[in-house]
Image 1: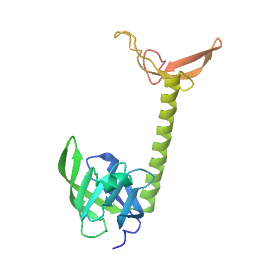
Image 2 (image 1 turned 180 degrees about the horizontal axis):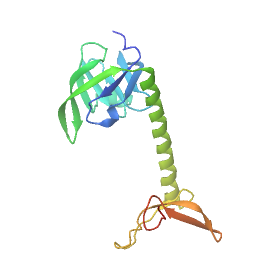
Image 3 (image 1 turned 135 degrees about the vertical axis):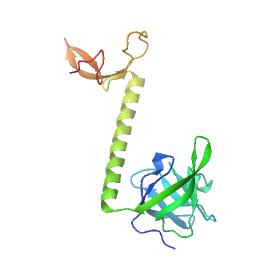
Image 4 (image 1 turned 180 degrees about the vertical axis):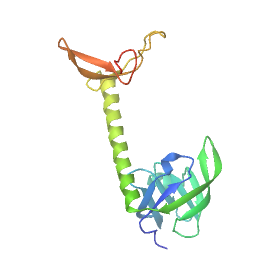
Length: 180
């Protein structure tokens, strides 16, 4: 049976990374592969298996090893409605109820916007981590090592200069930032 046209939105998984919008993305092992819209999660059936599997960061290697963060049975390839499933969380399998609803143009647009925002946040976090690791302070820094009664072990970001020297202010409200 061909994949479900248009995709679906999943909810009810223990891992929130699986509660996302999916769309058809070709075949894996002769069965439909549904990939997260703009993200790494996937729902698939391994070759020779009647069990669907969901993985937060799907790769072909993970699929060939039948790795999953959740699994369920469904006789056909149309993932709609509510199904009983098992979800791996906290070191054991839990019985859950998962719901699949049709992917609308609006839910796909929101999923794409969320994926883009997550991608940008990850890039910014990588820039900050690299800057801190190399001593470059253009993106700010996180202070550590102040005494316990001085709550200055926080994140600082650049705020211009003072007398020709860089000025950093605590992000948010706190003792090293002026808040109103």
